[in-house]
Image (tube, rainbow, N blue to C red):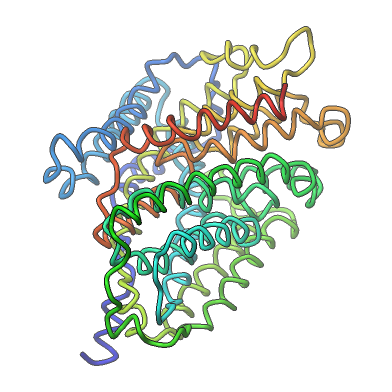
Length: 481
């Protein structure tokens, strides 16, 4: 196979995953003249049905109709998206529909996909060669390392960097599912709680005035507590299963290679990704590009352009053979692009209702987090956490941040336990479902592509409810009473 052919083999093919978005958006764009505002107080709970439909499709169809889902999940997701957009346009008009679609696609979905594609591409160019053996101790150390790295390079970055080496180390193991599940718990979620780089909710807090190292000092105790318990539970589980397997099989010749790293240039590119993300948070030149009334800030445009450049550099500078040996393909990225396009759009009414506060359909939840005018940290922890398990955890964090007053100085001071609870709930409980945090589904897709039979949507939640929910109850008693 020639170099040119190899390079073509790893080029991204995301257009099929994004095509239906353009189909939905273009008719509305043509009609957009003003910038109307969606008032969540006017929306009843029925508007959330398409979003629930997407979630149930992800949960049920891979089990009930696997072949149909495998070949048509993009069409099914598009169908649920149309089930929201068409009635919404008929009820509220094309102008408001256009504005909401544009806002979601340009300011939320595209930045999300661009960042995820950059991390997926760059991390997929790093290949660890040599004697990787998935013993209980080695796996536990790997999970601990990933948990620590998540706050430095983000949960998505750490997940994309480490999931392939971890899967390769366990290629000869019979029992692998538990390792991927705990990886999602620790690396893809809880590990990202110590800096604004770790997870989007904390980055939003940083933009709202929360000090950069405030999460480090205030979330270190609950994060370390959670990580320590999960690592112990994992080690015991893996040790029992390893013993049941009778140890590993003798190493093949490939596994007897000396340890080495291919694609080292991608470590520099990972650092460049972190810099590009920080740029959008610290550089504010003012103004932006107006697209049908939706303003794209210049810092966001610059950040996304840099991320696309980094993606291209990674593809150009990394040997195609390294990616092939790393089992790199665009399948997981295409799957995430299609599914999350529908999730982001059908989530519009749910987030609008949430932003309406006590006057919206979810007003009872918002009202329950305060008592006699004072915040209840335990209630904030669970309310922000439960909603972050299924909705985007960044806007959920922001809703409860504003519900608690929205003053960063006050929240970092007198009401520090409340801000700690909001931060911990939004980050930790993203692990409760596959869609709670962006890397969860990506890790699942990569694992399945490598032959690991991952639990269904509800099967995964059986793991999270059995392990994480009791852990979060214990965290509540220890830190948020």
